[in-house]
Image 1 (tube, rainbow, N blue to C red):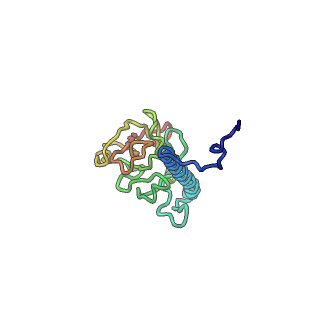
Image 2: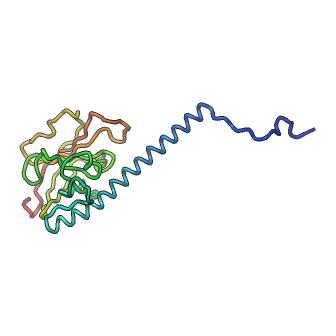
Image 3: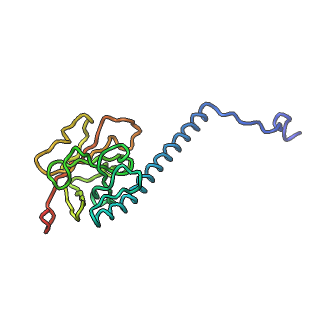
Length: 209
């Protein structure tokens, strides 16, 4: 008796992918592409912050504005620290090109240390991702030239529609408002929701500012 029949001993036959396996393969490739895109954005944001930090250090020395790279649209304006996390450099002008590299100051809002509502905008998958788990009453610190440090305490966090401009208004006391897209960690393009953190300026002990 033969161990293998003639039918079983035929040359290897190329397996055919079923519809299920094809769909599974497409899903895996799509996941890999999304992961690669996310890693690229994270790496780009990190590298940009390092270059911006060098330019910021030069600005602190003499008050001159230095671009982090020759073709940059803006120079570092301030340094932002949220709840003792890694400091972030802030650019002037909330344009698309600036937001790709750093959080940015909305020029139509109040300048730092001049009263009113100072508004900063950032992407929710890079620089302002930390807002998602920001504890209540957290502290936000802003440094600007010349060696001025301002402290704020979070008093509110909420989700609003992008058409709700009330978050940009002057509330009567000095505040800083951080705005990013909502929801976090979602593949939603052009969401009309915004996550808003509002912090009120507080005096630093022994400084009077």
